[in-house]
Image 1 (spheres, rainbow, N blue to C red):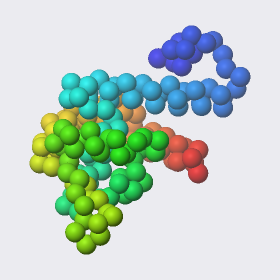
Image 2 (image 1 turned 60 degrees about the vertical axis):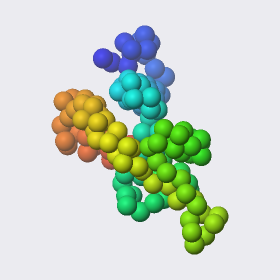
Image 3 (image 1 turned 90 degrees about the vertical axis):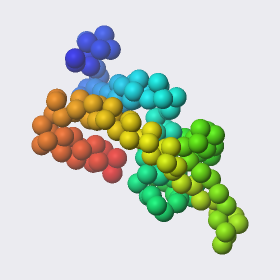
Image 4 (image 1 turned 45 degrees about the vertical axis):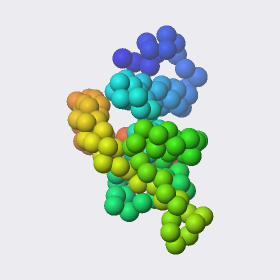
Length: 150
C-alpha cells in the first residue's frame, strides 16, 4: 500500500519528506512484525538482537561494550537487556579470571535452542522482502540506505 494511503495524507512537501517518512513508517512496520513473532517467546527485538550477536561470536565470549557496538538499536540499555536474558537462562555473565574488571557474556545452550526455534519464524519475515523485491532491487535499496547514512 502506498504511504499516502497508509498515513491518509494525499501529498508531501517534496520527495525527500516522503522518503524520510517512508523509511520511518517502514521501519516501524518491520519492527511490528518482529514483535509479533517474538512476543510468544517473551522476547523483545533488542533481546533477540543480543542473542544473535552472542550466537555469532560463539564460542568466544563478548563483553558489554562489544555487544553495545554491534547492536542495531544503539540507544538500548545493554546492561538491562543482558540481565533480563541472564535471568531467563539464555546467557551467562561471568567475571574474567585474568581481568576482574572484565565481564564475559556468552549465550547458553538454552539460548541457542531458542534461536533455533525462532530462525524459521524470522525467515518468514525475510520472505516479505524476497516476495516483494528482486535481489537487484534489494541491492539497490541497500546502496541507497547506506548512502543516506554515510
